[in-house]
Image 1 (cartoon, one colour):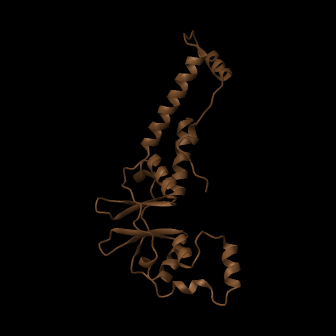
Image 2: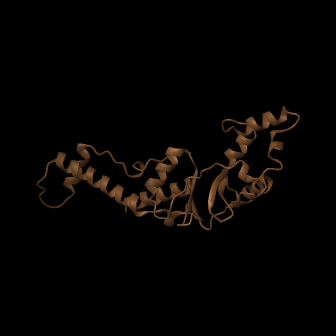
Image 3: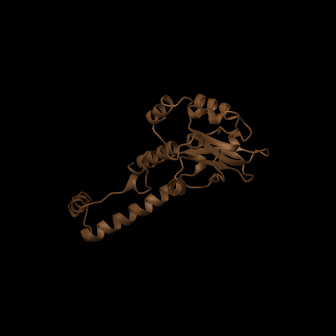
Length: 206
C-alpha cells in the first residue's frame, strides 16, 4: 500500500489566477493584494490541516475488540486464527495479559527461510520444486518463538499524524493500542489510517 503523507489529503497549490477569481467572487472591496491573499490562504490550510490531524486520535479510529494471541499458542493455531479472521497479523500477549510482541505473515515467512517478503508465486515455485515444503519448520513451535519483539505500541491519545509517522519509521502495518498496564484495548491498521484520512479529506471540503 502506498504510504500516505499527512499533508497529501489537503495539500492545495493555488495559482494567481485562482486567487484573482476567488477575490472577484467576494462581495465588496478587498484591501489586499493577490500575493497576500494567497499567503494567508496557504497558512490557513496548513493550520487547518494540523488541527484536523490532531483532532483524530487512536481511540476514535482503532479496531475493537482487538484480536490477540497468547505467546504459548501453537503456530498452527495462530495461522488458523489469522486465516479465519482474514487478518495478516495481531498482537501477542504474555501471562499478565500485557503485549510482549506482534506476529504477522512476515514472521511466518522469515521462519520459513525467506529473508524478504516473497510473492505467492515465489512461494508456490519453491514448494513445488522442493520435496518437503518449508512449512514443516513451523510445526511444534509456539508464536512466542517467531514473534517480532519488542512490539511498537501506542496509547489511545496518539494522533493519526503520529501513527502515520510510526508506520513510516518502523515499516509496520499495524500498531496495537494499549492501556496504562500495557494490555491491548484496540489496534490501528493501515486500513484504519487510510479511512481516517478519507474522513478528514471529506471534512476539509465541507
